[in-house]
Amino acid sequence: MYQLGHYGVSLAVFSPVGFALLRLGRPELAFLTGAAMLGLAMLPDVDHRIPFLDHRGPTHSLPFAAAVGGAFAGVGHLLADAGSEVGVALAVGVGGVSVGLPAFGFFVGVLTVVAHLLADVLTPMGVNFLWPLSSRRYSLSLWPAKSRIANYGLFAAGVFVASATFLLAVRV
Image 1: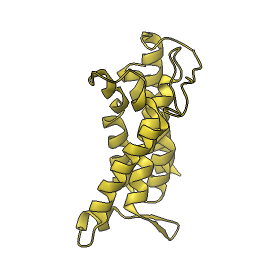
Image 2 (image 1 turned 120 degrees about the vertical axis):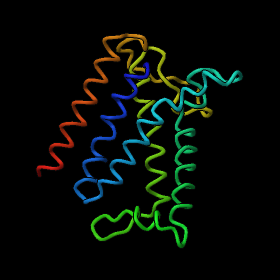
Image 3 (image 1 turned 90 degrees about the vertical axis):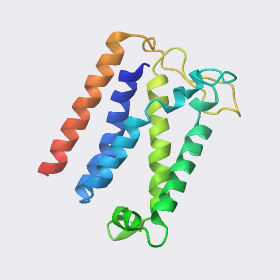
């Protein structure tokens, strides 16, 4: 998919997480999570800029998602470090159980990359989720990545889902 399509899928994938965070009274985390997911929606396509990497190779895999999650967990750890006012303010509490910022960061990092992969699996080229363990590509082959209708349609669907979810979260 192209950028708009990836934004749409990221919005749709973010929506249940954003809903949960809003319902837990954590709008700042919902905003930061959504901003991170949209801001890095195209991260796996960094392979276009790295000469020795094939497009939809290592950066379009679950190990890459885990690596990005690890980087986000590292940032979460730094923020949660003793004496960090930001870390204390962002600590995630779910039903009386505290979820550490490193764990939450890992979740957001993985989800950001997985949203990109889900958009690309819709195309005939597909993605190799299990690189380097396998060379098999997974594809639903619904439409080509360059399809304007698909990209605008996914973007519109993502905006609709995110908007509806937000309205539902603030009204419930």
